[in-house]
Amino acid sequence: ARRWRPSDRLDMLLIALLSSVSGVSVVWSEAGTAVGQPVSVLQTDSHRLLLIGRVVVGAEYRMEWARDQAVFSGMALMQSVGFLTEPVPRRVLALGLGSGTAPAFLRARGIATDVVEIEPKVIAAAEAHFLFGEHRAPGSTLCADAVAYMRNATGGAPASASLLYDAILSDLFDGDNPMGLLDADQLRALKADWLQPETGVLALNIVAFRTGPHARLARAVAATLRSVFRHVVVYADHDPRAADGDSSLPGNLLFLASDTAVAKRLATPPDEGDPPESSFYLHAHFKGWAPPELAAAADGEEGDVLAAGSGGGGEP
Image 1 (tube, rainbow, N blue to C red):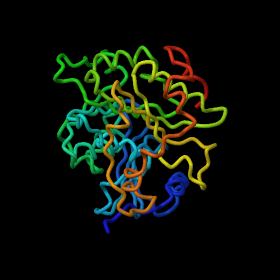
Image 2: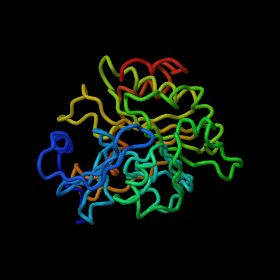
Image 3: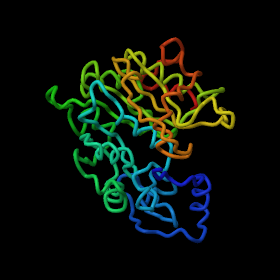
């Protein structure tokens, strides 16, 4: 049997970190030049973590055999871009780096993955202290504000069709920062200027509620994507029908949008008996984790279409 990531509860680990419990050591720390807060690498006996201020933006297992597995289920979910077929992605653009879990996974599969990250210290930390540093190619890493770059303020849309991306992976929204690329006009520009026509896929990760009074954001994101793309599907990072789940809590939601039937293009790996805590298990099962509460919005039948200055469709 192949190995899997340990089933540590990461919420307890974060509590330990933020409470300065003994056993947590600082590997590296420098003042951030773009985000205004220190960028730090901390580690415990089992994990290495990347923080901006007191916010964990990436993590990795220290055991050599587990380093290529995603610590956070949301990161494992974003790796699913690597399972696209018809066509298999050749070029992917990742907006936001963290510790580089998803870009490293894609590059290891031979997919040229360009990364845009605003904080140079995050890039330095990811390259020096995480597996991302062992996968610096294929693809390039650019230090720039991703939203401004996509709007051509500090970059420029690819000049020819051969340089357009097969997929764009956006992990910019954390429930607190500006909506950035989530309004319909920006999404239309992104689709026209950066994605391959017809087959291009936008993969958008947010942390949001999928049920209850605060689910308006998730429905609005699905409806907005559906107003721009012909096909939208939403996946949770856990089984939404699981008896032990709590649908009242927010979680990672991955929205995949394309002008082709993107769900049919995902060739997920088989279940090989790995435990539910593992990345392997998530990769084998996430296609069955589409939250039914968001199906109507993904079909364009409900939800607010976000426009510039709309405020994001309410609370997350």
